[in-house]
Image (cartoon, rainbow, N blue to C red; front, top):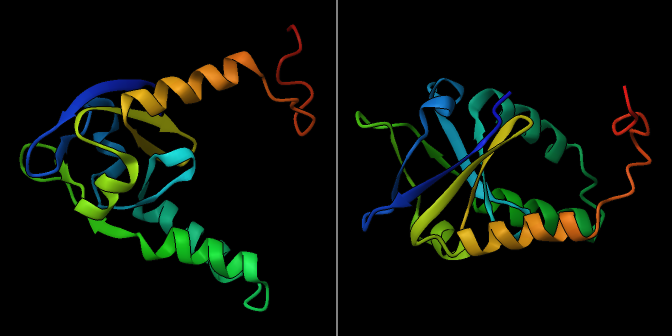
Length: 144
């Protein structure tokens, strides 16, 4: 599972160097798409297949499900690392996530996330200022 956060830059052609810690995770290719909170999600192909299966299982008759699938799937773009371990981020996705100059590449369960530093700092501060009530996993924070 990828974890950690790494500051990088996005060049004028929209390419970001993949941190060495994450290269094996996406070496067989990846899917970039819109993520929540204004970041981009980067799924290795195997993880994307699981996501696709979940999206296909959403009810076509539910307007919210259709809207979510549209948001998530229509922004998807297939990518591979180049010879310099860079990934090219399409312009519409760069614009969505406000990626220019500095970029935070962060690990998450089953995916990576690309953030603008300002949005990353705001997202981290929001959790720090108002921690979630983790009722789904009550033992997570229990002293061990």
